[in-house]
Image 1 (cartoon, chains in turn yellow, red):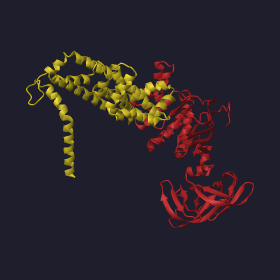
Image 2 (spheres, one colour; image 1 turned 45 degrees about the vertical axis):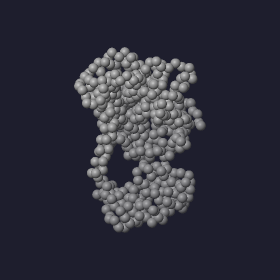
Image 3 (tube, one colour; image 1 turned 180 degrees about the horizontal axis):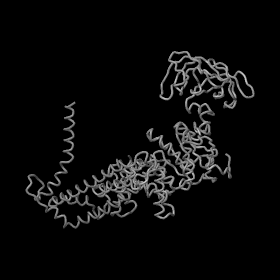
Image 4 (tube, chains in turn red, green; image 1 turned 120 degrees about the horizontal axis):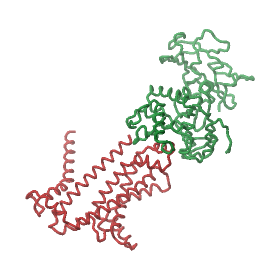
Length: 262
Length: 370
């Protein structure tokens, strides 16, 4: 009993080390004052962070990423909400199969998705720009939004809607005053997770981006210049922290949603 | 189906040939039911008998496949729940968790033309009516079960509906609170004068609170009558078995005159049944029902019509205010029960004692075999 406990413990420790040690290197080297990414560390410096302020291409890439992340997240959340509402409240022909197809991007390799989308867009003669990436990311995020919103709507007691209708409200009023506030933790979760997914998505953005790179595509392009490596690590540190904050917020709202049920 | 355009004005709710199925199972099977203005009406039945479906049809949440629903003389088949003069208290109360008590109670007034002051006054009045004065700003998550129910009541009553529908409103409360709420609900109904339709599986609840009770089995209403009639003259064997306790005996018809039928039972012997106590379609075989309290032990002053038989006590249980004796009759698989409530003045035999059991023929109900 005790022995197996120890084995499990060491497995967990090993797992967590492999998971997080590489990520820890990021902040360590971004505060190191050497251009060479190697131990031993030579001294503390914030110069790599300062350098980020003067990179115009970086600022453009960041702006592109924000536009894409916000648009695709909102689009995907609206779609996911509609899908979730339809699947939890209505019975219709072909419901299961259509929901399955909506969730397929979850398991489809992104590279396949990227190539397919690229082929379709080129065949349609459409230009590659920010909006083609928005399209790709919306496709990618919609399954996540759908799953989150399905659980939000499942937690919603149908008698609350009926009570609202019974008390004289229209369906639209009921949706606005009762349903929307009740599923708002789900909406916020979906927005947060969608934002994080879009912000650090590389493959689809790489295929579909035109002349305007997103942040991950920009970072990838910087690896060609060894001199840019430390400031790229500084950027990585910032992204890591932002992602951590957003994911923590996501978890907070997801738990709040579960509490609502009781 | 029967189509009617003008109906009895005294009936606030009139259901005509209502049918509703779920997945080919008939939840409501050709139900006709009229509910009088201002009465406390209960729909009583085991779970799955269709009583809640029927209530939801009146509220407008379920559409019947056949039949007509009239409320206040108007056909409401195509009227949405938000436009019907009914309000509902849900089984789980359906209190909006993100709104406080005042916002919950005043919810239905949002769509009305009352001024803010009028609405606040109405909310105060409704809260006072249900005994929650001063709870306006309380968060709905901070309410106990009984308080939630009062809020649900206030929220429904504030709109002054013609009919208040209550879906098992007391089933989530513990026993003491339930009994108190039964009494309060009854008082409330009397004071506001609104027609209440209550759905319940609890026969005590239905019998103590209602002016009339409708007993449902398998999607059909077996009997609609006052609680006394339901208890003393249950119209079908199912109602008889469901309400209270009933001893059943299988008998055979031996003779008939204009008012009575004489039947024979192996242990009870020959006895008379009054025809107005016999229900069903004619058959020489009859199932006879006698309530445990209508069987008496060794009664000294036998009335003229008393019948008697002898039996042996096989079990005896003391229930506080009553003692329940079980006797075993040779022709019956089940035990027959005798309940004695006047414990002080009644004989108190022990297990194994041979006793004389008497009953009055007028207390006996009977059902022709199907």
